[in-house]
Length: 442
Image (cartoon, rainbow, N blue to C red; front, side, top):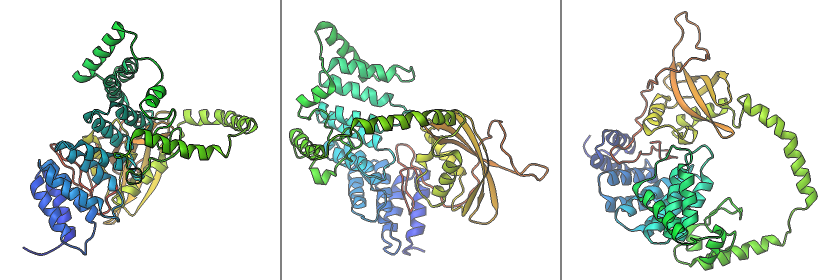
């Protein structure tokens, strides 16, 4: 009824309006949901509202809503709000505040893709003419990206950062990495930077020396990466609030890092004997690991990946971390539509394994009662597996149960009529649901 407050209804209404591309009305619906204090989920709602305003071309209003989202201490995935906040600040040209937001997104331990936030942080550094800092951000983004994930675009960004810092040889090398597999074409800006780097190298000796020396000369201690959370230092990225990342100088950050590392060195290095024992252990398990890999095994196993996929989807949590990086946005949306909302259980009926591709047949217990079978196709991702397709399986005509075979999976069909999962279109971003754990869920 008019004037009636219902956070849940308005939340779902906002999701539907986002699906329809009606971003202004979606922002209003999320705002109405925020008015229901008993419903809660203020972080997710404020994030959704900010995304809707951003998609509607109102970045200044989006900033206010997204800042509100970051203040919700109960919000389990604040990185979503920070990423959207970085986008909003970028649209209004405030790249310093955008960089702070992207960095906060990168240091959120719940962020499944910190490399994306670090790449955006590098872009902010470039806008602020801080090419050396951009180099560090892009190098760290590469560290966070998986071996099978496309790193070409990050290498192109790194090449442009090196070129901006007049590091011509490193720039040419980075552009070479970006194009060496033949799947990535440099942008016009990247092509121009590559041509300039080559011309500079041909006309002079060019920039030589290691990247570590280059960073040390710019104020970074050799081997010390203030942005490197899991590299040489073994440290997580420190909190932006604790370090004053954008307020203290690079020299001060490097000195702090060196002081911390000097304390650790007091414990000494591992002895040669410990190293040899470890090496022997590695050699003993190498044969077994290679055999398991070629037999289609990995960690986690295919069935565990599929069970976790259905369990996460049933609870309204993030599923993007289970999906193959090669999937398009539409393919990922199709998989999300096929998966049943609120499934109360899932049972693996069979697994067909191979070295690079596998198929898993599962039976899910639906929230409305009854059971439904699904066939999940997976592709190898490093040592583990990622989902690249989900289709509904119907019983055979003779009444038998679906079984694993080697045929091609059919087209996915959405079968669940549960709550709507909103996804912004025309430049919008996906909305979050009440439990909201990733940018792809509602």
